[in-house]
Image (cartoon, rainbow, N blue to C red):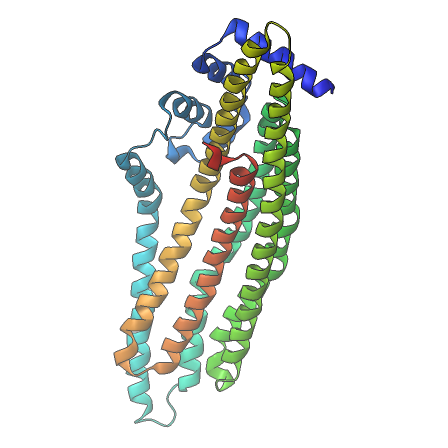
Length: 368
C-alpha cells in the first residue's frame, strides 16, 4: 500500500512541476546516473567515440537512435581496419604452407626417404592452431571483461528502477546478470573453451592419427555445441518468463495506482491523467536505458567477434584454395579448424543474446 501512496504523491508532484511529457522525460533523465558507464567505455573503447549518457539523452530528445548509416559504417570500419592485415597474413600463410606441402608431397612420390605426408599435415595443423590459439585466450579474456562490464552497468540500472518503484524489473535484471556472469561465462571459460581447444589439438594431430583423431575432434566440438544450445535455450526460456512477469507486474502497480488516483474526490481526473503521462514517460526512459545497455555491450563485443570472423574466413578460404593442390589431409585439417572457430564465434553471439535478453526483455525494449 505504501508503494501505491508513493506513486500518488509522485504523480501530483510531476503534474504540478512538469505536466508535459517532455518535462516528465527530462525529470526521469535527471535520475539516471551513467557516469560509471561513460568512464568504462572511455577506458575500454576509446576508438568507438561513444558516450552512453549522451547517447541516452539524444535518443530521448530525438525519439530514435541518433546514429546515421554513415556513423554505423564508420564505427565498423574503425573496428575492422586494424584486423585486416592479420587476416591477409594468415590467409597467405595458410595457402603458402599448402603450396609448400604440395611440392614436398610431389617429391615424396620420388624419394622414399622424404618427409612423411602425415608429418606435413601435422605441421600444417600446428601452424593453424598456433595462429588461432591467441583467439581462444582473447575470447576468455573478453568474457571476463564482459562480466565486469555488466556488473559495472548494473548499479546505474538498479538506481533508476528503484527511483520509480520498478522493483520487479530490477530483480529480473539482477538475477539475469548474475546468471550470465556467474554461471554462463564460468561454464564457457571452464568447459566450452577447453572442449574447443581439445578439438583443435585433435584436428592438428590427425596427420599422425591415421584419421582416428579427427572424429574425436568432431565429438569435442559437438559436445560444446550441445552444451551451448541447451544452455542458451534454457536461459532464454527462464529469463523470458521472468522478464515478462516483471515488466507486467511493474505496469500493473502503476495502473492500480492510477485507478486509486481516479477515485479521489475533486482531483481524481487530474491525478489519473497525470499517471498516464508519468507511466509512459517512465516506461519510455526505461526502454531507452535498455537500448543503451545493449549498445554498450554490442560495441564492446563487436571487435573480438570481427576478429574471430576474419580468422574463420581466412581458414575457410585457404581450405578452398588448397583443394586443387592434392593435399586433402591438410584441407581437412583446415576445415576442422574452421569448425573450431565457428564454435568460438557462436559463443560470442550466445553471450550477446543472453545479455540482450537481460537488458532488452527485463527493461521492456518492445514497449518503446
